Image (tube, rainbow, N blue to C red):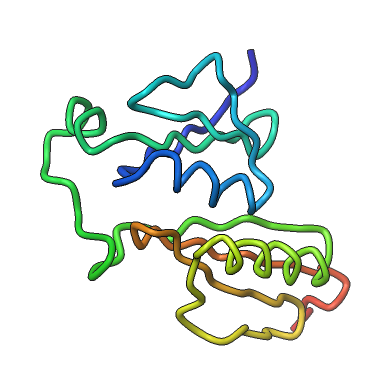
Length: 135
């Protein structure tokens, strides 16, 4: 089995969160989902585990961060075009996410930010390496 990453997020409403991540383009893996956690698949090796606070606490040794008022991490997803970035953002915003800042354009990379209902922050970006500065 290849290397995989599972990002575990504490959420207050599993169904609402699952609907949000589905709108972003994730799919649910019911094999690893139950009433206290939902496994959302981004790709063959990248998964987001949406966990109730009770289930998340069973794995954690520290209190759950209030991600509505503090940043606990920045998670980034790359897409194949700026159109894909804009479509994902539009779907996420329609599903109740918020965009806390304007798009950032670095010349070779365009990046937008979306937060879910619990304040988990995602950077959605497109990078064109042919435009990457060489000096």
